Length: 395
Image (cartoon, rainbow, N blue to C red; front, side):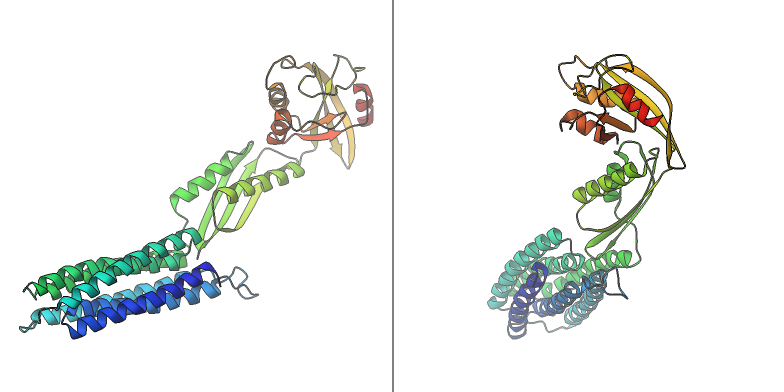
């Protein structure tokens, strides 16, 4: 039994107790508003059972329902909204009938105690359900929390009416019942519209959509082409299309995984992310290697950031065969920098559109290494000792 199910059961038991107390006190000690409020509380019991049912079966997946029954919770919330409407109508009807009755009974002192007890329990219960509903991102539990919160608010009105009736103004009791009914109608409408929007696959809220878009757009060499997202019960489904100038399939796949990971870490309760990246297969690749000297006979440098020079060469891949097109050597102006030399060198290689960096040994996982990863520059180890030997491999 999960947390939501336990909360629904606790809610049903607590609500049953306060509903019974209000009903008995209102019936035997003369408060129409308290009896009406008791009827309202009884609907909370049905609501808690409905939430328990929705939470219990919403995660079930099958061949017919491969995406699960997440929307079952929203369907339950819709049912709760209709239940609230019915409750409001009954309270309104009872209160109007009482107000029009020329013989009104003054409430007894016990009704004040019953209303105070009900108010305290309803307030604590609503606070508890809001906490669980937000932490578990459950729409049906949040709807139930609103319903219970309404119970607490209406009990405040009932308490005022009961005190006024006890003081010799019995007309205040049904008047308060009418005001309570109008508040309940308003809350029911909010729950109804929220549930209907999810069932009709309305877009995710603007704030969350912008958050997802910002995460995706922050990736280097990427442009957000299309973003759609929707709620389904407690969960979120995201469809994201990106464009990139990266033309290497391996890099695109790396970018895809990296982007999805960041979105999931930032936005909770995502069930599925359909992430598509448009790219073109790259036939020409640009390579680089750190060098000790500015000539083709230079030895390959052991360190990346401190290398005085970099050898750059372009290779075309046709029909599975690689061919060297051109090569050159450039100076590394950051080799003698006291700080961030690896990061600056990686940035320089990125500006030269380098796809692959060859190293003679294992590269230290420092700033330079992670900068190369950010620019999607692949790191490959070579057993060649000299730049010329490496070029010969592609001739």
